[in-house]
Length: 235
Image (cartoon, rainbow, N blue to C red; front, side, top):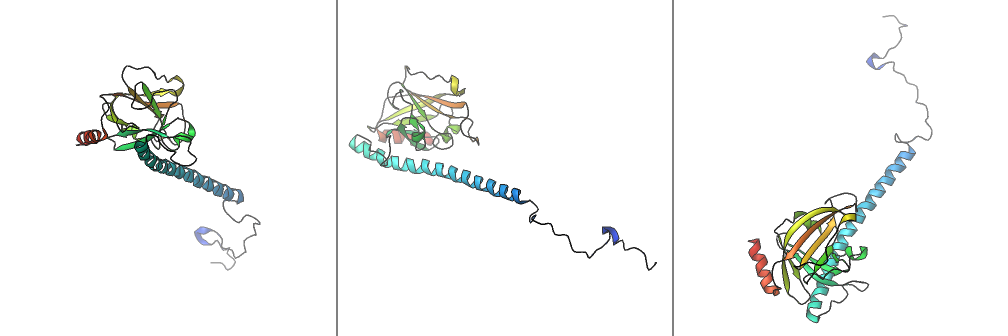
C-alpha cells in the first residue's frame, strides 16, 4: 500500500476530524414554528378533552340535584328549583327497565336545559298525560341509551303525583331534522324521544335525528306496582 494513498474511510466514506459548522438559530430538528404548532395542538386537545369531561360531569351532577328536587316535589306537590339559578324544573321521570336507566325530564328543550337533562319540547304534552309528549336530549349523555332501545321495549313515565304510566316502543326511525314531522294530536297517549344521529359521532350537531316512538299500554299505576312490573320484565 502506498504511503500517499488517500484515506477512504471504509464503507462510510472518508473520516474527518473537522468541527461541524455552526447552524445558528436552528436548535431543533422540527424548527421553531413546528414546535410552537405542536404545543398549540396539544393545548387544543387538552381543552377539548376538558370540555367533554365538563359536559359529562354536568350531566351526572344535574341529574343528582334533580333527583333531590323531584323527591321534595312529590312530597309537596311542586318541584322546587334544583339549584339556585335554575330556570327550569323537573316535570316527569323517564324509566327504561331493560336498559336499567332513569332520567328526570325538565320543562323546556333549549340549550341550557339539555345540559342538565332531557327536556320536553314547548307546545307538546307533558309525559304521562294525554297527547304526544316530545322529549329531546343529547345523544352522548342523557339519551345515549336510545342506541340500545328496540321495538317492543317497555318504558315508564313517573308523574309528579307518583303514578307511573307504562309505554311500549312501537317505532324507531332516522330523519332529517328539516323534514321531521311529529304529530301533536294522537289517539293514544304517546311518548316521542328525539336525539341526534349517528351515535358516537365525533362532531356535535349534524342534520340527522333518531326518533323513538312509544305508546301507552295501560292506565297509570302506583309506584309500588310499577317497580314490581320492572322486576318481572327483567327476570
